[in-house]
Structure formats: C-alpha cells, structure tokens
Length: 274
Image 1: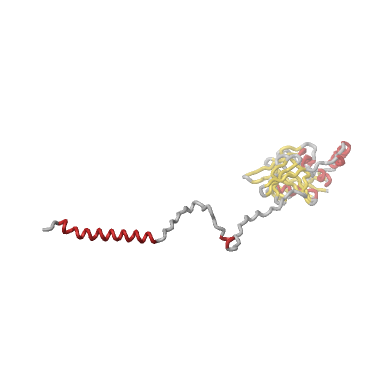
Image 2: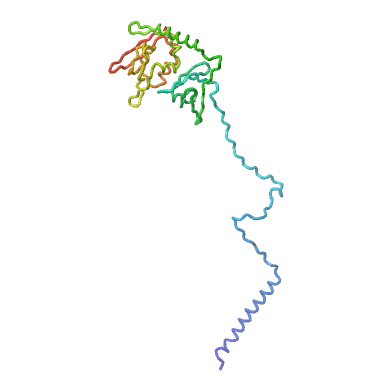
C-alpha cells in the first residue's frame, strides 16, 4: 500500500515543472527584447540646466516684455509772477502779495490761487500747495531806491500834515484819502494799534483792540483800548477775510462805519474819506 507522500509526489512534480518552464520562457523573452529606457524624474522646483530655444528654432518672435508705464510728468509750480511787498508778524500775522498789479492782503490760513499762506517772517513767507512748500521773499532794494535821511524826514512831515487834516464834525470823522494810502502798510499800522481776533463759541466775534498809540490816526478815529470791532458797514465780521477785504479796498471807499462794543455799550463810528 502506497504512503500519502507517494500519492502526492506526482502532482507536486507537475507544478514544479510548470513553474520552471515559465521561468525559462521569461528569461528567453527578456534576452531578445530591447532594453527599457530609464526616465529621470525632475522636480518642478529645480530649473533644468539646458533649455531649448523653441522661439529661434521655429523663427518665432519672442513676446515683448511689458514696460512699466512712466508716471505722468507733473507741471512744476512756482510763485513766479508774485511779489511780496509787506509782512506783519503778530496776531494775526499777515502779508501783502501783488500779482498782475493787484495787491491782496493775506493772513495765515488764507489762499491765493490755491497757495495757502502758512508762515510769515520779516522778509519772507511760506505757502503750501499739494503738500509742497513754496517760499516768497521780498526783493531787496538797491542803492538807488534807498531812502535817504532827508527824504525820510520829508515823508514823515507829509504824514504829519495829512494827520492835521483829520477832523471831527458831530459823530463823523473826516479822513484824507492820501493818509489812507500812506497807512496802507502793515508795519506802520501795527506801530500805532494792536488788534487780535476775538472768538465766542468757536466763532469769530470781531477784533479786539489791545493798544492804541496816542495821537495816531486810530486815536483820532475814536478807537480806544479794549474796544471790540464787531461790524463793518453794518455787516458782522464772520471771518478774518471779511476784515481784510475791506482793508484791501479801503482807499477806494468814500465812507465807512465801524460798530464797536465798548464795555456793555454798542457804538457806531462813522467816517468820510475825501
């Protein structure tokens, strides 16, 4: 009687023969086939050492590089054509600027053609426009224009003569027009009177007089220390520009009235210009 191993051996031998035959067949096929190309995997983060010029190979024009659009050239601005004729450093600080033969009185914060007056000094002022600073200086006078002592004395006597023509008739004070022309000089004005803006509830209520020189034209006009000028020609002074506008055209006026507050009393001063 055959053992169990003797009964299974023929089957095992057959499977071993099949596996051996398959292995031999694979080795034969592999020997006759061409070798398989090995592909190299490159990282996208690493740039190849060699590049191929496809554009030149196919006679193609490379795409034009985009150039940055140049910033528009801003037209340079200046204060050419403006002339600084007078400055007054005080409260408020002011300056007279002339353009095209017309003078304009400016205080700090006022504008002319978009130029804002920001600082006032003895012989120059600073304007700002579009975030830039512009300086305007007074032209220095030459030797020919220098006033000699004799001429200065003559000018002073002329002012004294005009001062003698100021007279009062009733409630009205008469002032010669030539005197106003002589007084159209901020430096001269602030030698004889000191004024400061007066505010109430954050609004301009008028101009307060802190000092008046005795014997000056302002003294003869009836203005006194601690007076507050509230109205000009019956109109309230809403801004410093309102007062300066009258100052600019003062020589052209024939009459003028000032409403002042003196203590608790309101009083109107009338003036005639001849």
